[in-house]
Image (cartoon, rainbow, N blue to C red; front, side, top):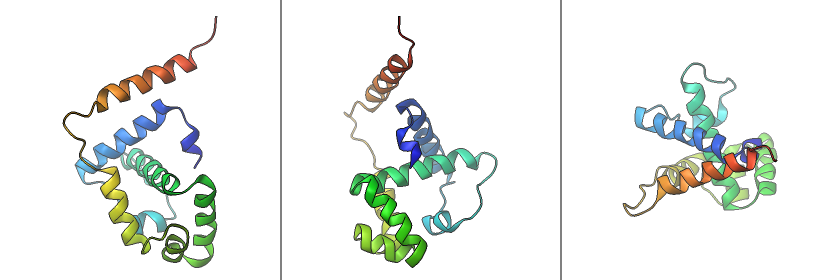
Amino acid sequence: MAILAAPLVKRSLHLRDLSIGQHRGEIRPLAAFLTSTEYPCGENFAVFYGQSLSIVEFLVDRKSPAEFVRFLRHAGKAGYDAALKDCYGLDGISDLERQWRQSAFAVWPADEPVLTDFANGIAADVALAAPGP
C-alpha cells in the first residue's frame, strides 16, 4: 500500500509496465498472484509492481485504505475468497479478477485526453519535486 504514496511519475511508470505486460500476455492470474510467496525475476518484476499497484488502487478506491488493511488481515486468517466477500462484497478471487481487469484494461474513448492528463501529472510532480529558490 506504500506505493500509493509514491509520486505520480513513479506510479505512472508502474502502470505503464502493467500495460506493456498486458500486451505481452505477462499478467499473472490473480489466484497465482495473490498466493505466490516469491517475487518474480527478470522483466516480470516490472509487471509485478504494476499489477500490485493496480490491484491495490482498485481495492482502495472501492472503499478506503483502512478497509484494505482490514481485508489483508482478514485474508491472513480466513483466506482471500472469504475476505473479498466480507470486505468488498466480491464473489472471491475470480470476481475480483474479472472486475479488476475490466477496470484496469478498459479502452479509453477516442476523445479522452489521456496522454495530456498523464503529461500534466508528470509536469506537476516534477514541479513539486524541484528545489525551491
